[in-house]
Image (cartoon, rainbow, N blue to C red; front, side, top):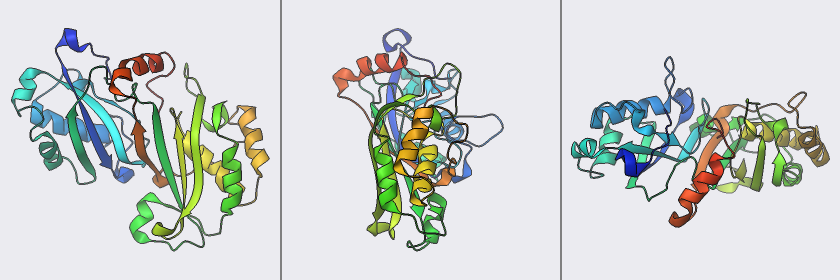
Length: 288
């Protein structure tokens, strides 16, 4: 489905789509025959607007979110032919047409013609995720229940912060990833923060920015930080687990509903193709 395209040969015109979704009702982003997914809904809407595509519009996404995970700033690309575009008039009305057809828990925020070399997945230089936790001091807001993990006891945020600092940098995160054949677990966490948000009722927000994330990595890291916040392990214990490079006996992977993809970053336009080529040699499509 995710087929690299040479625009000069195949005659496709590539478009970037920025979107958001509440992942509660979906079995992840990637299309599946027997389950409702975000990509499945997008493909249905695109087919209604542009007609059938033998290559599923060559859709590729920046972050393949799991079942129940949300996004406020997801990015994907699609490839369209001139014939398909004539049905709508290029981008004029594309966003509105898609939003009219999509469920209300999926919203397209922008549609733009992509610059040369752009690949939503491979050109991305970083992703940022946020995990939201309402512990005992934070009032349980029912309006945030679908995107926040509720914990009955209080967590020590200072301990969580100290544990998080030991994860910054380039490491093998095998202890925090579900292993996949022929996929590397080496990642670079560039930023990680743990703080209460007074504007959200003192909910604890864990934000992590990395070049990419392997499967379950963010939720496993949050599990380690929660253990630190509960006093079950110290910062050194989290770093020691990282060094073991094994999921055996590791921390609990936290539920998906607290996790949201909040940002995807890209280099300047003249560096997009080089970034994509570099990443293709390092990652697989299963990486997030």
